[in-house]
Image (cartoon, rainbow, N blue to C red; front, side, top):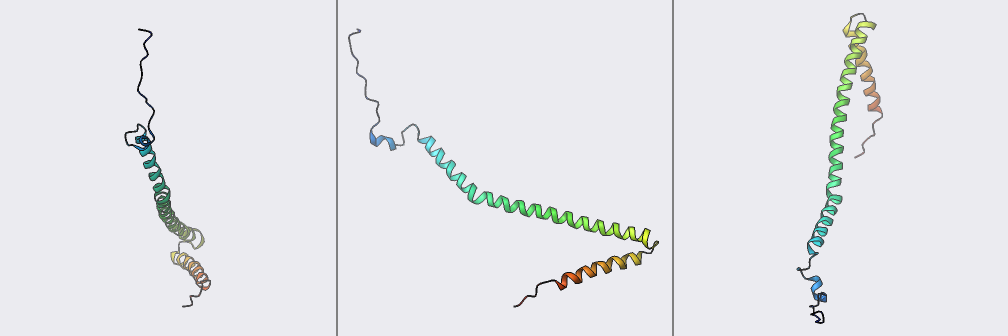
Amino acid sequence: MDDQVTSRPSTAPSPSASSAPSEPDWPARVADTIEDVVDSVHDRVIRPLMLVARGIVFGIIIGTMALVLSVLLAVALVRLLTDYAFGGRVWASDALVGAVLAAGGAFAWSRRGAHEG
């Protein structure tokens, strides 16, 4: 029985079979294509939206913190002036802080750009 030669069928794929859906690597190619499309959408749409959302959130946080800090500093300034500079006269502290803020507002108003329309 050793002398017998058995013939095996050819397992080489034909040229037309390479594009057939029955090819064993087509799920990998489809998965790679889907992954490329998702990555492209993420890079072009999702990433810029995430950057804008982060900017908005951090802007709100910074604005809120600045508002709270400015109110606390104004209260602390009035308290310090009332106790140490004007001997308990709150009206004088309020007048001084109001004058400083009004002068700052007048300066900012004078530096604004004139809108020609």
